[in-house]
Length: 214
Image (cartoon, rainbow, N blue to C red; front, side, top):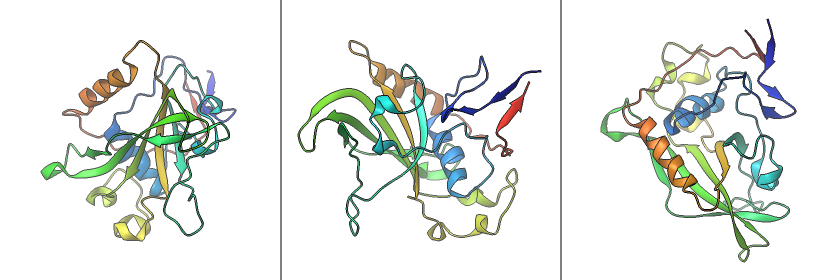
């Protein structure tokens, strides 16, 4: 039997044949919510990296693939609410409107998260040269009533109200390089929306382990 470690040299490495392709709802409802609530997670499938401190091409992982990271948001000024999105070579700039991530299992199209789309620019803000690097930043806006449901081990914190948690402490980021002459970003959006449509989010009782044996 061969033992595989999910994370090696700071990057996610799944066993051969495995692909990490979560829907947007799964990213927010399963992984980000679990991170904020300190639930057991599949051992470091999504690494923790302060993504805005690095240029996108310097982040760990395969640049030809979508990469996922848990990240914290660093304030630009000590007493301000603006987020510092500057790296050594440029900055991330938001584009378009934020998109609601809606739960497929809750009534009235209940939003559980929000998605912000950002593009990386070389140079100093507000000027700079637009690149083909794109980031989707997901944040949680509601813990949901399911925090006391079955499949997860219950903790004292799990039953507390949303206000007891810092919902904006963590975000989950999807970073990819949009190839010139292709519709990579649009294809990604279409793939995600099709997978979200009618999908039922699955709740797993993950064991906090650093390896898996096959």
